[in-house]
Amino acid sequence: MLALAALVILRLLPLLKSPISAYGYDYGFYLYAAAHAAGLKLGTALWGGYNSPLFYFGSLLHIPATILLNEIYLLATALLGLAWLWFFGAKRWQMGAWAILLTACSLLQAELYTMYLWKTVLALPFLVLGFKFLAEKKYWAWAACSAVILLTHRTTAIFYFGAIALYFVYWQIRAKKIYWLAGEAAAPIVAAVLLWPTLQPIYVNLIYNNNEYVRTGLFLEGRSRLLLLWPVLLLGLPGLYFHLKRGKNPLLAIFFGLSVVWVIFRLPFFHRIWIYIDLSLIGFAAYFLGQIDFSKKKLRTAAAILDLSDGTTEPAPFLMRSLGLSLPFPRVPTARGYG
Image (cartoon, rainbow, N blue to C red; front, side):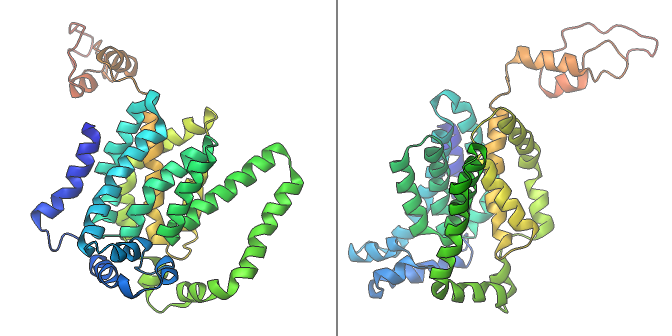
């Protein structure tokens, strides 16, 4: 609960400093869409842009636009923290707590929040839960999460279902079901042909749009992203290694790999795909940190094993002092002195 409180408080702090200008300019677009949703048809509200089915039903219930935006936005942030707790389960609650703290401290997630990418923030909790329910074969719960993502955010839906498609291909390859694999490979091709009249305007807009920010997705600059990502990268990559080595469900790893490949090849909207990379690394970093025993006895042993004493007989004095631990061994003179 403390980790969840920290997440909510850190997201509220910008509002306390400057309530009007805390968010990016997308807030104005969403506010206009929510305030004028009464004149929309349901089909228009379901498809892209700044519209949302929530705005449509909110207008029918006469809910003020600011409440639809602000309260749901903060609720979705808290829900992401709860989703991490649910993702790791009660027996591994420490990993869930670490995931919440890492989310709270992630500068990429903070940038996502302050830029007011409303649909992305709303979809991420259901992405985390959807992966969990699919891995546990809870198909009704998975279908509910999938429906929310599909109705909430188009980009998240593409990566979510893309990762799931690759996940099924992975299992078909492991099971050596060649006929199923051929069918799964043909299905997206057939779907693309049937839906091309609808998809063509979106494709043309993304590939040939004169506005670079539309093609690449406005987010942090490339060098800034790497500088801001390195702490969770340092913890997340070992977590990914141990996660795969111990035979855990590979769905989140597949999602991470798909996002990385998308960024490497600079495919449409690739700047904002760093959000998914960061989210995946948070999950793996939490898995890694959750396996470390942070008791004083274990840390003392680790410090002694590492032995950064630089020639003295003291076991890693610098490391132990940095951890706030007392030195259990007396200082003994050596040929090089006391160090």
